[in-house]
Length: 288
Length: 257
Image 1 (cartoon, rainbow over the protein chains, first blue to last red):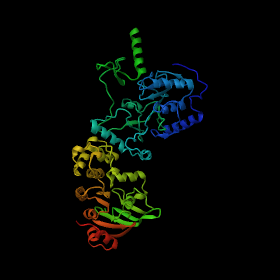
Image 2 (image 1 turned 60 degrees about the horizontal axis):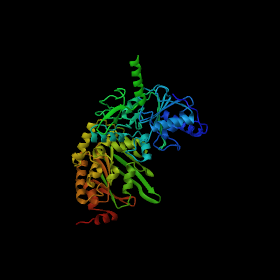
Image 3 (image 1 turned 180 degrees about the vertical axis):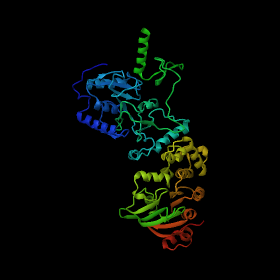
Image 4 (image 1 turned 120 degrees about the vertical axis):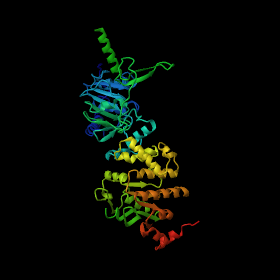
């Protein structure tokens, strides 16, 4: 964990207090109606859309001086995006940052849920590019809102039907649509479907922020999250034949890395904290 | 079941000062096909949209005899119930198939959508009924995974019909079903429609300006002009012995090659 001092030029956590209140109101409403997309007045942030402006605003609204922040991008703590956002909050809020999932109180994520199980009291903030799961079939916003209001979700299965008819199986591997609390169909943000089961009845609070689309939605702790599927083509997650080349894990989400021009490749954990934690534990064991 | 399937009472609709429908009433009995004919702008399509709940009329009632819960006033149903009715008990075939189809998904998904919307969650069974219906509307079942954009106009229209009939509706609204098609395709489509309506015992309301279509499909005719019904009766009676001057004009203006 690294502690820093706040740059006094900025208001705490960059956003002004009125804006943070506005975002908190949206978050409260989102938590009260699990899976419902609450519109909010998304602000310009000092980073381009697509870099996590929604997630950053949600984090800025909920973070306090005593929080410890972890930011991951595709599971990694050391990519440009993750490092920049961590530095952003270290400078504007003076909060402690960490790469360790268990130490963090707030985890902001792009595209992954950490492998290390999160616990009650922690908050997971997702960066969401397209919050509307119905958008691909229905371009009109007024109509998709009406479909949500009337639970008119037949078209979501049309998408899965198309998958099976073209690929022989449900080929959607990320942003897999889920039904939250038996009411709202929700985009799971671009996390791989490998992570979807971790959303169901999770002990931690999950907040989703879409900056460009100006929407916030949430899954409160202990809420049922069901993946849409067919009876004869049930939901299932990816499996790998290999184990992680670094730590040997067989239960984690693996990235394929090309190592040379001769077709050489290796599979490693996408969650760098989980991977290095396992390696450290192994070393401790062999030293003892 | 006794009583009419659909009881339309005094439906009126005006666009500003233009009256599209002026106090129109009619009844549709189970198994009956009603044709609405008239020139362009006579209010036929507006009437169809009002009756099918797609458009809110200024005044009037549309009473529908449901399968299980007696009669309901369609115009005062909640939106969720109205949508449910639209995709289970009713069908709506648009003049332009692009309005009634999802052009970005395959033919099979188009047919299966209604089933999935009412809770079908078994891929195999959905696909089987899609195949069955493509066969019934004479589309090669090998094209089940093709997009409707690759279909000809006539095929798109037949696909639209299959998509509507898959849920086993009791009432189908057809808005100029043969509108944009060439004559030989029209004849085949009409033949198909007539067969399906007779075989399934459907009730239907067909809006058309083509008297030949009305003659082939409809048991009973309503002739509209300037938002009013000028003549009603059995199809053959109206077309062979028109009483109202406008109907006489309409019938006499049909070309006989």
